[in-house]
Image (cartoon, rainbow, N blue to C red; front, side, top):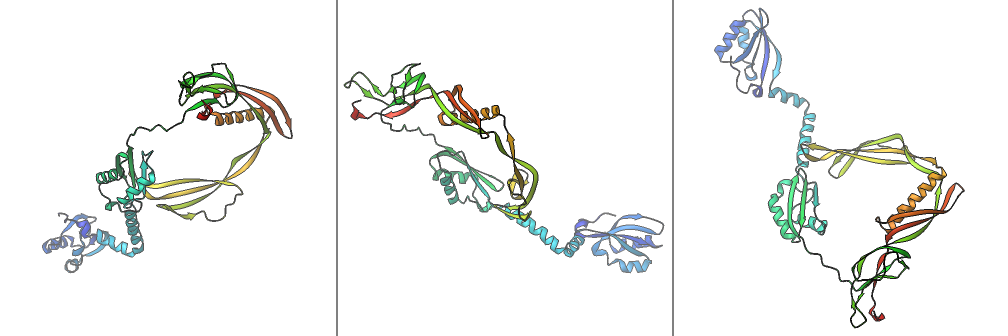
Length: 398
């Protein structure tokens, strides 16, 4: 017999019928207009069949007439599912609330990012975006179309040549292309380029001004390298801003002391984990309560947000790993200590005088080992930029 429409939604039962007049029962069902299907004889006097839930109570008079009995073997469909959920109503309510909460959280704007701006302040862009409704905790369905938001922000920020608004999940990204404007040269008074220290000139390039020294010239601190006075005599002279690059050999003397016993931090392998449930910008600790069992420790944080396709949801999991740290001592040989001290001095030179400086040579003038330390006096020969600006004072008759 044909299966009734939407039998799974309307609900149906599978029954096992036993008796000597099963054929008479099937014929009586057909005459009464009660649909049955999947009729399968299981033995000489038993058979399985299915019928709709609404027709189940109409079987009683037919069973009495034919002398058959039945046993329900399976309940199928939405009505029985609803009964099971009602028995576990708190569990069902929890599932519904979870999906409702997830839907609400995914319908809010959680992050607003600004990219591409260099001269425009991020705070000004976010302020203009907030006036258009782009802000954290805003309902996504209340936002205008991306094209309308882009046009509105472009009108509010004329310094930008183009502004794009893009939404991915709960994050909105504002892309800014700033208008190109020619940089205005700062107003600079005429000046010389003078030597910043005693040195021997290794190279000189005068972009503007009159060079007064040559390569291999020994100069003293404060001596004019490139003059900002052009011309012959006071009548034909002209004051300009001297520009150029001058490099020279400079000597730096360092007094170094390096302990032979070095202390270093190492992980012992023991740790304590703390777990948090992350909701937006808030974290709720679930496990890992109690005092830290370590005297010294470092904490590593791992964030694992929930994702749906390519979208990051504002719900996730965060783990803090509290790692025990201990100090270990390492004894260096004198040669290792000397090498360590010289490397530190070289890093200091590059930090003070520019990374384009070059160490030409180094010479240890004096060294000794005393009180668990290595003491050294080291002379470094460095090629570095030696030019610095000096304003021209007109009252001096330049």
